[in-house]
Image 1: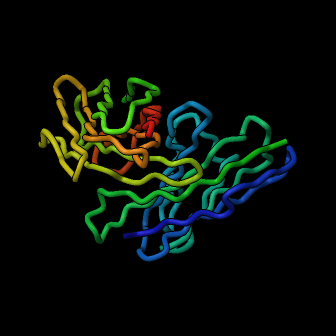
Image 2 (image 1 turned 180 degrees about the horizontal axis):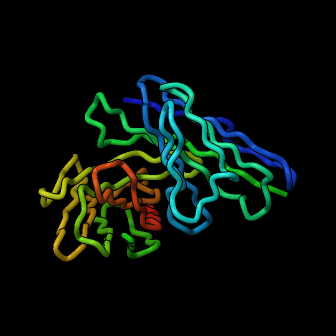
Image 3 (image 1 turned 45 degrees about the horizontal axis):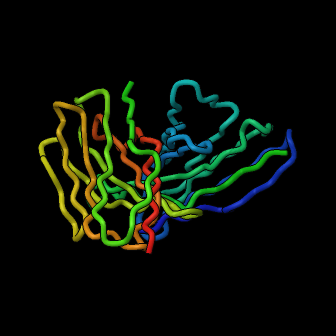
Amino acid sequence: GAVVSQHPSWVICKSGTSVKIECRSLDFQATTMFWYRQFPKQSLMLMATSNEGSKATYEQGVEKDKFLINHASLTLSTLTVTSAHPEDSSFYICSAPDRLAGGETQYFGPGTRLLVL
Amino acid sequence: KQEVTQIPAALSVPEGENLVLNCSFTDSAIYNLQWFRQDPGKGLTSLLLIQSSQREQTSGRLNASLDKSSGRSTLYIAASQPGDSATYLCAVDAYGNNRLAFGKGNQVVVIP
């Protein structure tokens, strides 16, 4: 089946630094990818929709200047957490639908756990 | 705004028992509903997808039902096995645009 990878799987950084997370579709093209965030014991919350070749669409309450999304190719979307603070510590996970396979089944990456000190 | 609730939050069952996991959603106007499995440190694996026009879907020991009018879905896992231990997530796609609203999950432990 289709595979989505994320890198890195773990990242620890100091407050104020920026962190980039990559999401790749390994064996299919993804014109759209989704970024979710999950805090402990909470549900996954959709942050933004990443669109290849155009601007991302952010959900209400998500700061677009803080969470920069770039979808420069059909297999790669990146999420950059700028000037990270401890409250940004969370589990970030991306997903991508395989449009050629019908598009309703989404494939999720393994997630990236971010800890901001 | 669609809100998805899963009950119980956690449960433990002895091996061989049937599992019943419940999901409710506030807005019955949905496009589809999916059940996922999440293992620690790993991504989500899609288990079953039910279209809004369907009442149930089955795959092996798994059966998911959908009652759109009452805003409920139930995932049944027959004859549970220790390998079924995981967190099960229910997610609703309201418009068919792949933007999912998730519940908090049912954390399941199957005791050998």
